[in-house]
Image 1 (cartoon, rainbow, N blue to C red):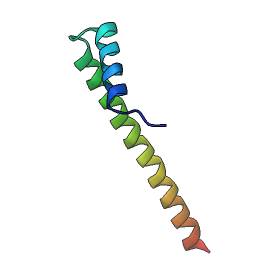
Image 2 (image 1 turned 120 degrees about the vertical axis):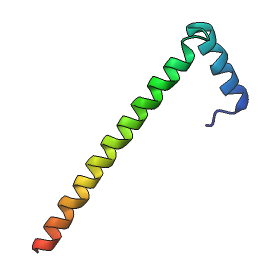
Image 3 (image 1 turned 60 degrees about the vertical axis):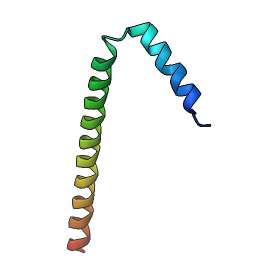
Image 4 (image 1 turned 90 degrees about the horizontal axis):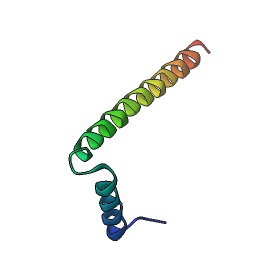
Length: 60
């Protein structure tokens, strides 16, 4: 189930009606920052897991 171009346009129109054109860039920026922080934290967790698994294989 994918969202096509008409679906994206409809979502954008609804967002413009709800939040208005002045708030929309601020919401996009905060969403982008949140996603960036989430990505960095998950990358840190996976890096820790990789280093832990390397330590246990080195000891064996």
